Amino acid sequence: MIAALSLSGYFALLIKKYMGIPGKRPGPGRPKKGSTIAKQKFRDVLAAKITAEAEEWISAVRNSALGAYIIVEKDGKKIKGYTKAPDINAWRTATERAFGRPEESSELTGEIKLLIDV
Image (cartoon, rainbow, N blue to C red; front, top):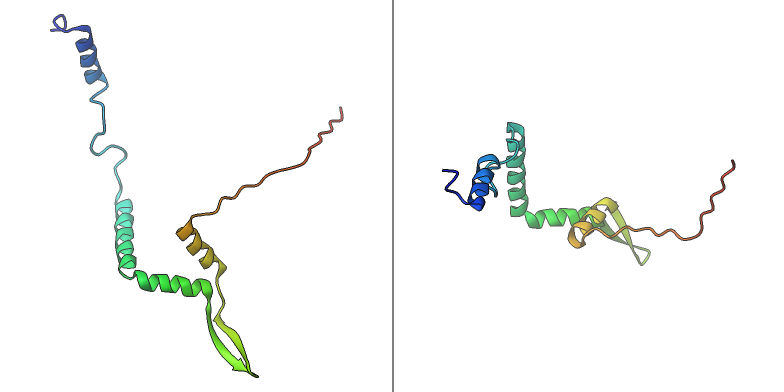
């Protein structure tokens, strides 16, 4: 049978026999354990609930970032009094998720002198 194959056919047979069929295979990689599957199901349920109540979640994040305040009029002046202070971490997280994280780059300028005493 091998004598009847051409050289390219012979190499194709060797590749198929020893290397398998190329391409994506179903179910590759390490099998997922029960805890991983449970975590994924929990994430899916949580994502569905948050998506269903998106308006309330957005409002809660906004209120946390901006703080809650009341305006009181005292001696003819309007004074803003916070009942809950603004949270800078909530503000940062919300803006980074909405607009992307800003690039953080630092540029060094100047000279560096290296003195070696031997």
